[in-house]
Length: 303
Image (cartoon, rainbow, N blue to C red; front, side):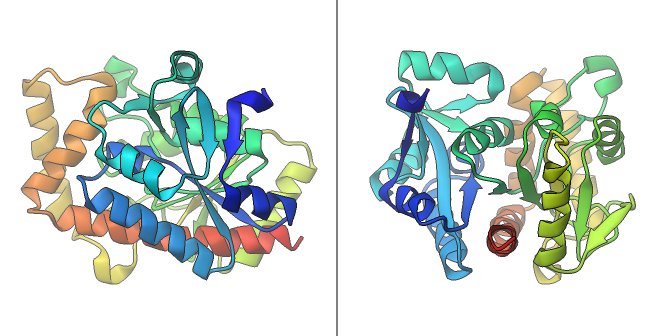
């Protein structure tokens, strides 16, 4: 298996020196934002992690390998290539075997991070139970991965296009801790609130790290969601964004858009209907998650 994983020089040195490392997904680069903002944001996010005492490891599939950490050229290729595959658990084998270029989702990034021994992963928002899932059965693989893969995911909650109540119910059934970071309510990606309370919150990275260490020392399998709200100055109004999501959902249904095409369509439509303010919010929440992820990785590394 080691032949299928390669590390950037920066990440390899960090691991040799037992420095804290934070995993980053690559779908946000290839499918989450337009070029060149995607590559610019990826570089900024990596630098935020360095500035907070950890080493960034952006993960992608290239040349038949899982790349743990990308060079500048690889980041550029990922952000600017038209045919980058979106890689979840089910796609990893075929992308590696066919040597195609692939960007990892939350689920695939968690798998690759665990294979590399990385415990902390910062992203935008997790996938979840889609609205109407009681008839479509459209549930993100991210949730199942959180139940089985030992990585903490720092995110701004679940994407607001989802059914957040059902997402939390699913995570509870699977025994996945959802820990509010300086909040007692599940954030909803673009907004700080969702109306759904959380059973546990932590005020600092040290407490988060201690909770994770206790969970994994007990041999409990699976990860955890660290729900870190978007900074207040960048949050969108609940009523404003919810109205736009309802319009985007109706348009997706009219156009027969289903399955894995749903999320990119809805996020693109939300960006269009908010005249770009949602993209700004998206970038800011990712930067904030990177900062908290780095601080958590440093705290966990010290235990």
